Length: 466
Ligand code: GUN
Ligand code: ZN
Image (tube, rainbow, N blue to C red; front, side, top):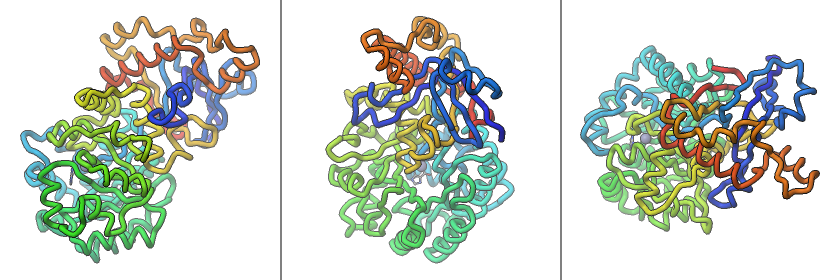
């Protein structure tokens, strides 16, 4: 692929704003140029400084937009795409009534492929460029998903679901087939192009202790694959889990005793965790996928984000849509609901913290921060273009703040700095002044609260407009 250049306002985070001052973490280039070659960012900096060197490259210009890293959805179920918005139940009855019947359709590989294509269309339309994905118990559904993602050159992580009890017979595997089918899928797909594999026990209730141990063996035999499951989502689920595993001491203990905790382990929900469990997640460098639209939809509870992010025992947290319990593929909507869930707990989620959760935070949760999540040369050029005027309401509301996107009205140089310092800082994309930060914060907040797929002006995968 020949090199290309993208010009416009670039905004990204280079560190965790829950643990460091936001101004140290945020980078903004009001008029930037990013050069992409073979899908990789080779250079990014002020347009004025780089334009002469790259004058011959084909240029895509996004004036009055905000270019951010592609969104990362750290927990979603592709077979549940068609059952989104299923009425009237909480977790366990919702699974029995809606989800288990639907997932049985995915024994048909052709059907699974059709749904996978629709699902990926939707992710890209909503600005999601990487996801950690539950497929179904049928290995052919996992094959179908990887095939569809590979054809689009996407960075995706997925796995076959393991479940050998407490579900309809047609959906059950065994500890042995869980191991052998997963092993085959890992050998076929893990590290092929941009694809990665996750060992995926559904949750403690639907796996016997033998099957959880088989999952642990897979992680030992393939130390660089992921582990993806549900944890502590709903109080009835937790009570049943404690009955099934009385010796484990806690819900997390069930997974711990099977050897499922590690730095590539991602637990969806974690709404009702004890401080002891949070300490153990921190110790093992595990991540939590915060799924606010799902937790509200199923009435599961309010995830204590600020408690989870306690800097004394840091836990990686990112966002998950959890479609079909989640109610939108949009990480803008998901971040907006995360804000409201924090409000209900007398906390506020800064818009730049929400942007972190949807981008670099997701990359860190997936141990992919060397590849995606921010605009650093050497990383993969998956990015999206946000439109702060996407709807009449957004356009009207945002009128006072749009000058921060206009290079002519928005000098990146802070007059209090010496000229050399200012040059250096604007080259790095440091925030120039309080006003710039306040205007950007307001624009980003409006996108989380009012935005959805309509605000995704464009999605680029490995530099290419898709
Ligand atoms: N726990 C076990 N399976 C599921 C699922 O499919 N969705 C959600 N939200 N929670 C689960
Ligand atoms: Zn889920």
